[in-house]
Length: 285
Ligand SMILES: C[S@@+](CC[C@H](N)C(=O)[O-])C[C@H]1O[C@@H](n2cnc3c(N)ncnc32)[C@H](O)[C@@H]1O
Image (tube, rainbow, N blue to C red; front, side, top):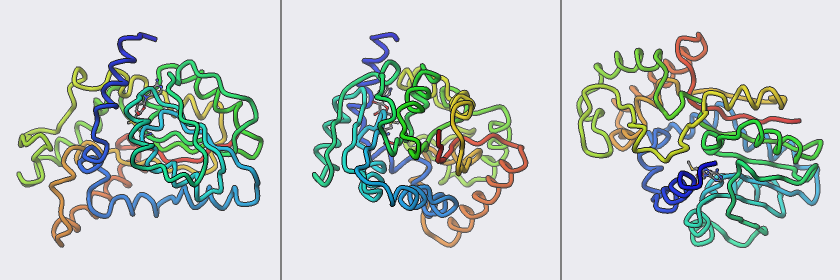
């Protein structure tokens, strides 16, 4: 691994205002987080599946401030969590704003690409919006696989779209057409600029490992694990809404548009017309 690039990656996430970032992320569009959750309630399935086991241990990789996973670990009755991230700043955010002392958390700074995990050790492993930052996909997948107990579950909630968030040709074609139907107020990027065409991030402005091998994440994981439950989504919603979520309101007009785009997204993914950008899934050994 390139030490300078890893340091750049760590610095980016230390400085990031996680809350502000979440407010403009596509999942902040009104009603969308609920729609995603009710389509496949990963957390409820995990809680029920692990209910009969005692002394549970959890692991989370590249966990940032652990929004999401920390609550899932608590609900699942996990008593101890091992947590890893590159960024000191993210660890500080977790202990300053999320940690309540209910369970023990050993949060260490490490590069997950070279992290060796204990065998047959964890009941629940959670990787959220992070696998697409790893370069050593095969190594990390293998480490997680062998670290699970026989009944253990691996929860993945992640980006699986085009490398470096560049959008696939089909996503670009469909979203460019839809973009022309949107009023100006919904085309104003969080930076303030009104976009005439769809927004594609400049690779040079991203943290260096953002989506480095994102297209390979799912195939690599599927070669090693059994998928028990999975939902792939946001082939058009992510390109249309990421960085634009703050423009949408709960007005009747906006909610109707949001509902139509949600349906269209599902139809286009189910028919193979566009590739999904995200997955929520539960895997077993
Ligand atoms: C998009 S954030 C997601 C954070 C958190 N999982 C969440 O869902 O909010 C990506 C995280 O991965 C961490 N990261 C990136 N590359 C890493 C690596 N090689 N090893 C460990 N952590 C890494 C970053 O520091 C950052 O906290």
